[in-house]
Length: 419
Image 1 (tube, rainbow, N blue to C red):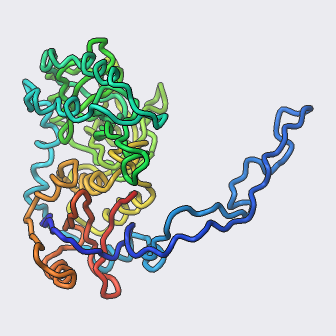
Image 2: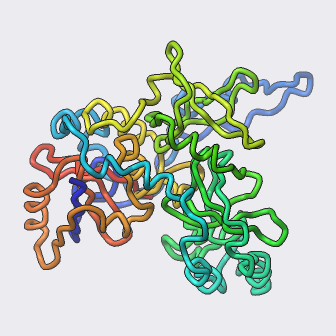
Image 3: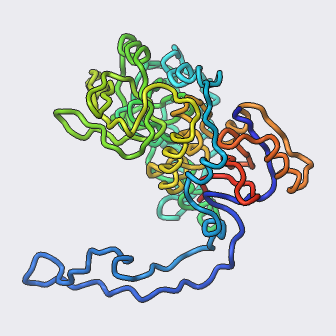
């Protein structure tokens, strides 16, 4: 299972890139003028001011080329899963090793990488453009290097857990860095410093902090980089052991409120989150979470939004999880809480207990690797149909991964996330 297929040709798609029609000038009805504020009222005089354009019968202009396959093929999970999916009766070996991978940061006693390996951004980024699309001053890079405090690398070396979902940054700053905004793919939103993201209450290992303490350098089970220090809390061995020994709740629905009886809302659910079970009551699972005081607190989540334990690969869960994924837009490195190509596939596989690396090149090396070097496009498509297992096969192009979902109307179909 988890066959990784190399391909160099263009594929018909479920979720993105394919044949484009020429770009045409946008055509739309003129938008209503911004309504004026009635001086005698505290609200806008126009009752339609806050309605969506589609509610007013208006059409927003479209920018960029249309993707024909988005109109040719159903943009739903069910038809593809019902036609091509499998209901596995047993777990695969890879599904039995998930927890060891997931909790690996808590097994570290020192940073798992040498300082020379993790300081690559300081060497790689000597220039670029900022959020104002102006060149960033060389002194800024010197300041970042100084505050990064890599002289203290490994000085903390402690177990910790996240208190919120956060971006993982290549340098200790929220400011973006673009290579060249005048070139496609080198400006917004492709921030060079957006490394990855980390979920709420995810196990991490903390190496050290910046000189002012505002940022912490962390390792997750799939990435490393900088996060705000106020978004983590250290835990002791007994808390880590309690969490690891508990049954696990795997989230299968995004943006469901995790709540407690006192504070109310604490965090949103996210597919890819794994939380320890506290108890089951009525229509809710209660999960153990760690708060900012490093204390255990039980939060509730509806049963329909999660399941207990690793799930065997099955059609119902694949439809539910895939449908959630189709609601998302592309998020470079997890930016804005969205997913890019590799994190979409990684998160989709997590509820099934399949651990995948974070980036596309690393994912391409998991499982049985079949190279298509030297084959024609037709030969590649034939081999995909022969060797590929729907919803268990990753197709890799340089810098991009796609999930093979079988065939539809004699076409090879894939699901992927693109900008």
